[in-house]
Length: 418
Image 1: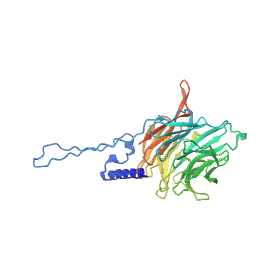
Image 2: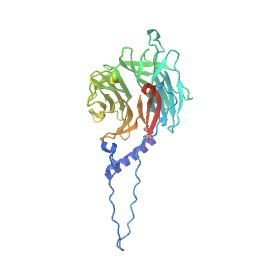
Image 3: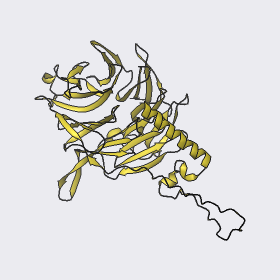
Image 4: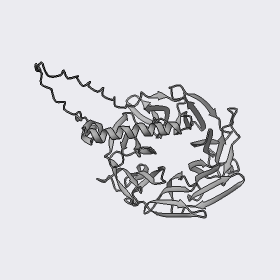
């Protein structure tokens, strides 16, 4: 808690200087400046000459040292697995970095103290099974690792009690618990959180419906999410209630758990060609959502590109939904919000990895983190230090001669920004 208070005081002091100084370089850069235009203020030159002998000698005012602009570190590989197709990440209360990935049908889990070195272990899948799409959650110093287990052949005879959504939990001695299943057999995991000792999960049923499920000790409950058919994002508020952003045929919706079901409404500014919402809550339980707009999700045949395609952001922090486009670039999105400053951080990954950020009331600024194509990307914020972690999969190239293509798997890399 002391780290949070100290960082809040520093940021508040910095904000006061920005307001009183009225210098262009102290405020967030405009889009033009971010694109390469100069934003440095012009410094006036003082006249040089002889002062009258009776005049006191003026003490020169020292020129302040410019604060260096925070930049992303060089990419560092996370572990050695080279056939990963999904990745997630988290930062615990001790500022340790955690990464989990689905690699070759196994779950690869890595942890670092943030100094560059990673230690990894592999949770091998059982025979005739594959483990995919992991999610990480924390309860204090306890790490939860959830994932989907499938049968590789998909045959009806293969569906049994060892198929579905499972989780493991770290133990005080450094070991991990045995896998425990959540929900019904053959379900798949979409989102996972832990709060107050209760496990919260979004699962996809065999009939393509989506469900909000809770597990508290030996008690479990399962609630359908009406109209949801893809891309459900889950967060738990400070009041212990779940909030969910999800896709329907008419656009994106936002729901709050009432204790017996879900109360939902449309996310203002969304429409039927919006998909893949990512949700984050701030300290006041206001919703922040990013999503992709295009008429053909996943690259399927559609009516073709539209002038307003791109990546969008919306929030209900003002009491009503306010939304707008961040960028025309599209790809997998990830979102974080600084609880102290209200600054929003967005990562967009596809044909290159791009980072966008804005302060409350400010404009979006964007930078390119990597020119390489990525398969998946996530961004996480350490609330104690303000450090950002971005993790992504760089796909390997495959092919013969000049006919190079990007494969559906690759190696994991991480970058940080102080």
